[in-house]
Image 1: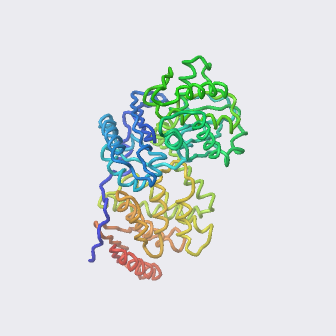
Image 2: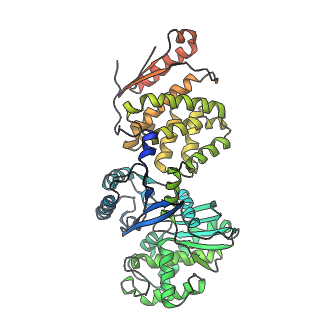
Image 3: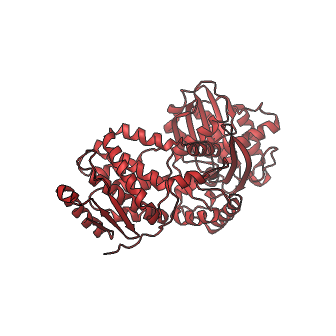
Length: 516
């Protein structure tokens, strides 16, 4: 028997039942926001349907300031980040699988070879780290705000000025309706226009103009359709604190109060001379850049009064994580929505999914597959034919493109890439290069899942519920044996021919398939 070359990153994992049993049994969960300016962690416990915060940790890491023009991370910023994650990791020791969710935002999205840093970061933290897209970040920010702010039933505009990006959302109740993530934040704006620390009328005007230009394409979209404006996260909370300390506000942020704050910044003339009551020393170096963005947001979107909520990305992560532990996973709704949008044959998808699940149960232990992998296989089975909405020819490639490029609420960048790879590889030649492009820790599992999906699709080529009873799979690390009932293949010559072709395709990719 020919053995295939083992993909790097093969790992043992928990089955879905084990994962659910070990995840958050005490109701304690943790969320980490690895932002461009600071890293935050919240530990909370679910009690009576509400999250009660047990612990908070925050460190100014300024990861975004450590990127050069080519997206390469400097050694000093890397060391700060890993040291911080090691400290956070100590607090998380003993947390079970699925009870911690850590996400990276703008800086990790822009970082060159982010996978290398992520591997070291996950070792330091002791838990997986996801990279989320800008609109997914916006959706989670809105969720965090919605759980911490009274709902008056009216549509709301939510603004979050982060270190590397600014998110703008219009939503109502718990639903984010319109979302944008703009490539500007307090760190990036400060570096571009106030990097030498000098604050003048000219430097502030240049920063504000740059922010208005960034806002211009979405200005008309967000100027109307809302009743209340709400700000979230560190920059906006710091602005409120300074305005309050000076008596310039009653707790809300107004254009007049921002003008007074802007004048105070210019009067200080340099970051090192900022002595504003209410402004923390760790926030001061990037504060002027954040004020410039917030000023432009108020002017461009016509905001006359902005209130400030405590909940944002971290709280959104916590509530969504708690929902997953209660089997309320937004990703399930996303997959169902995508299947409806592209008119997937639901009966065929269900048939393929059931067979793929039965296959998974027989090989999961040997191949070291986890409950997360089982869910990924189920989603891939439900979506493997979405490309047919584009064209039958090479529909697996069309489907992979749709899965990779669509906004998929609840999905991290890594999971979306794996889903696209499995859909891309579910028929015809096995695309080794597509799987080689995945992060090393995901490569092996994604390849195995693709093999299982390919087999399930092949067995359901007639698009009926008739599948061989007593199908037996025996896996080795580099091969798969498939056993049918005696005489079944002789009675199904088309399936036998398909399996011969499948064996050849997998053999060319270094995967050994035997059947009989």
